[in-house]
Amino acid sequence: MTSTATLVTRSDDPSDPDWWRQAVVYQIYPRSFADSNGDGVGDLQGIISRVQYLTSLGIDAVWLSPFYPSALADGGYDVDDYRDVDPRLGTLSDFDELVAALHGAGLKLIVDIVPNHTSNLHEWFQEAVASPKGSAARDRYIFRDGTGADGNEPPSDWDSVFGGSAWAQTPDGQWYLHLFAAEQPDLNWGNAEVRDDFLTTLRFWSDRGVDGFRVDVAHALVKDLTEPLPSKSALPRQSESNGAHPLWDREGVHEIYTEWRKVLNEYDPPRSAVAEAFVPAARRARYASADGLGQAFNFDLLQADWDSGKFRAVIEENLALAEENGSSSTWVFSNHDVVRHATRYGLPTDPEGAWQDGKAWLLSNGTEPTVDVEQGLRRARAAVLLMLALPGSAYLYQGEELGLQEVGELPAASLQDPAYFRSKGAEKGRDGCRVPLPWTIGGLSFGFGSGGSHLLQPTWFGSYSVEAQEGDPSSTLSLYRKALAVRRGLQTGAGLDWIDDTEWALHFTRPGGWQSVTNFGAAPIELPEGAVVLSSSPLEGAKLPTDTTAWLI
Ligand code: GLC
Ligand code: CA
Image (cartoon, rainbow, N blue to C red; front, side, top):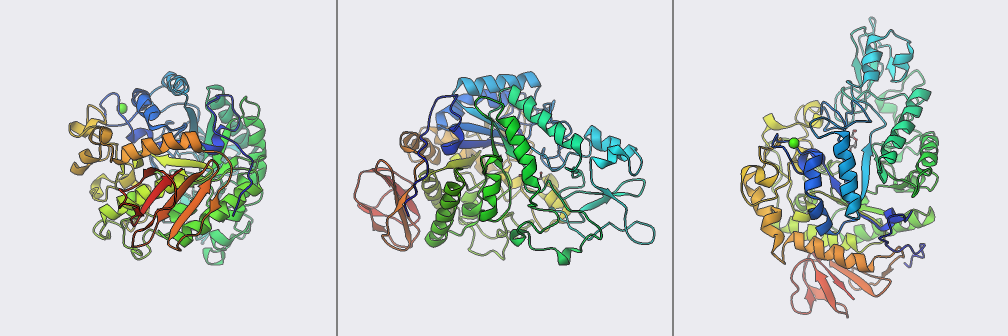
């Protein structure tokens, strides 16, 4: 396949409106990145102190997960106030300092925006609970009377994403909808005040210099709650609903993003946006359209088995879709919601479906499958070189540049994820990928801060630390740095040409003669003609070993 997508080369011009199309974006989970004041929680000053590290990686932008005031019922995705900084993480003036530091280093900043739900501590929800049934305050959320003789049964049998009922009862007997934790009441996007307030929030952060937004559960905002509410057994499968599900991916959601796009385009350069929308690839294009958010996450590679045919199908489909709607594809292997990919690739092929279904969360304590750490890391390194050679933007998650493994051994008593509690322990949840980063080989909290760490770091963390890898040319950190530097010189927006060698290899060329070849097979294969510039594992003479990617020019 030859793609003829618009040629958009990378640019270091800060006013380039297309900067996001080929960007490498590094996700920071602020509470777990770097702690400046020794209270065990990462903070904005901690990030500022590591800007030089970010620059040394060679990334283009930082995506900050929520840093807003929050009781952390869901790691900050339960927002108390959309236009402030959590006092444990800093102040608005620290935020301004961070923007200045990143921009000064030539890096963009994307922030997370969480429009589907507020937290239960948000002043709107507090007001709603204190106000009577049918009040304007309740109309900002989704309140319904219960069923059963005394109304003490929920309005429907729907489940929340984290397990348990999607409805919770307030003291006066009414119920409110929460697709996630009970501390995350869903907003009513039919309410004009809700719509207007988010436009104010977009302007608030854009005015402060933010370059883009990552839109949390972007496909859930518009709902059809026409009564009688259907039973969950009558609901279409989310992935096949094509706009017919009452809760997910309804057509009306795009009107919201058209309105947002107008606001984002008031800025120069226009603010970018990327949708987190769990919808089939073909429906993703709408979220990524130029009059919508502009870009959408594609989790297809993250969910694909380590198999050349599956990888190729995903790549072809997504490049074609991005080209069709004038966007650029996104690629991602890890984020704060999934088991780190260096661990996933070391899991047995089908651990009873535990990491299927887009979640990739480990099973609860004691039932984890055995991880082949060496195979996991080897494949993770091969995967990232393949990803970084693709047209489009690449999203990296903090710690993957260290080849960090999931922390599977967190004791139950220290878990924080509502998915663990609401599933009654059936799912271990996402804390294992959110353990604070190791910066140094030893020391309290491995250089994360001068105090402890809000999630326990295992003893093996030091060997993955930045300090342990810094001077080692064969380390994963060195691989990422070299790969990003080479990509910077070669990446264009233009497509790729496949070269069919063997069925267990993926080999393609990019404009300028850049070639990437990955061996998914069990035996070494011949390297193609060309000069090798980088390989994810040592080569065996003129052969490319198993689970290895090489770049040639
Ligand atoms: C998104 C976030 C996840 C959060 C959920 C609810 O999927 O990535 O961390 O729990 O939305 O806000
Ligand atoms: Ca701190």
